[in-house]
Length: 120
Image (cartoon, rainbow, N blue to C red):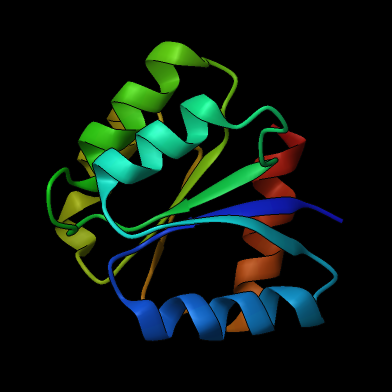
């Protein structure tokens, strides 16, 4: 289905999300553990992911700033925020995120939101 990049500082979450996404037919093609790494990895990938799952609170660079940087180099990038910090929703959407989910997220809701982001 979709090629996914996960940007989150929680290593355990990467493993869980990759497993859940795989069960839904998606493929995780890249991992980043802070916002700056997410930006650099995305910018250097030849085969871009269809969707980036972005956390807000990360070291080095937060998800909102990473979103702005990614969209600066690729205005067509599709970024779905998944964060426990619901107060970041307005800022994330204003920065260009295509959607926002609050952790914890049920797999059915995640798959539905990925489909919606892909259709935009």
